[in-house]
Length: 60
Picture 1 (tube, helix red, strand yellow):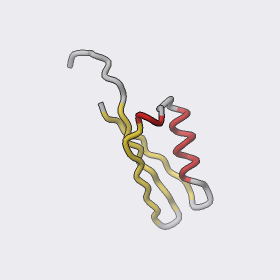
Picture 2 (cartoon, rainbow, N blue to C red):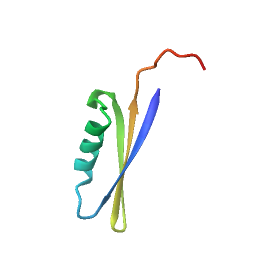
Picture 3 (cartoon, rainbow, N blue to C red):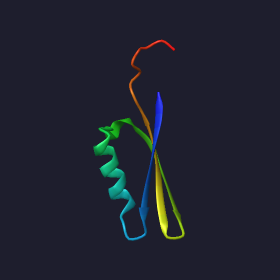
Picture 4 (cartoon, one colour):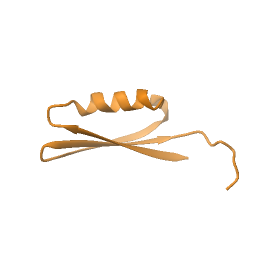
């Protein structure tokens, strides 16, 4: 199953560092990361982290 996390930073902050902190905070292994899409707009930066999580085998 694919999931996403959205990370924001100001121009003064390092967005790549914020992404690394987010991966650690939510216990997302780097091998589960499919893509990280960065965007810089005006004085803000954002990164969309796309990652996979193991299927829990539940029925829906």
